Image (cartoon, rainbow, N blue to C red; front, side, top):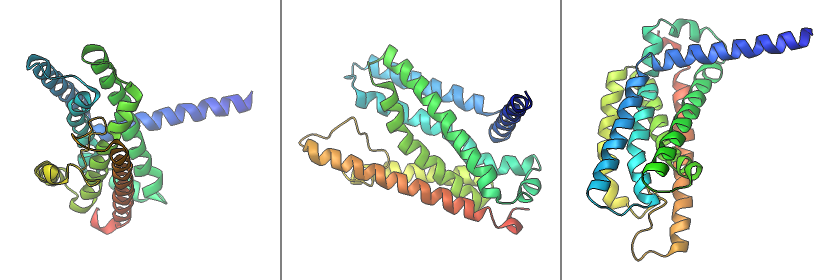
Length: 239
């Protein structure tokens, strides 16, 4: 009986911790980014259908990638500033192994939530536009989404200001789009569409290219997160 009570109490505390951290992370503004992401998705989907463009898995991927990045934008860019505004930084820096116990868990919660929302968006696209493998689509979308989110988190620990980080990420995004034609058929293309094989491209080579691209994005995510967590150890630069 006592063990059941402890398990129940532990579960309640975990739920409260998750709700509290999500409240701090999104600061009541995430709903607007969610609505904007869905609005962008609907706008581009309607435009695609209106123009009579061919609907494929690759088309759906292109329609969902920008809304996904928009979803990750706010929590990753403004997370540190939200802690500062709520006067939580001083408290958090007093907790041993701060980077592992707080922000690593927060990042995990953010990515899981975005993944679930991406599954929802993919399911809507599968019903309204073109039949797709929902989980596979959401999984592939998470590579560029988490890549951009992890990069934004890293920059936020360097700049320590949400607005400044937002400006920098917009500039980085524009630069990546400009460079996309130059790296379109290489493993360095952050926005590589795995469902859209280029014309006159060997399928075996294409599959190898996708694997290399996902390894590149995965390793980059880890480096960005670790460097951001390392920066968070420098208490004197934040408080």
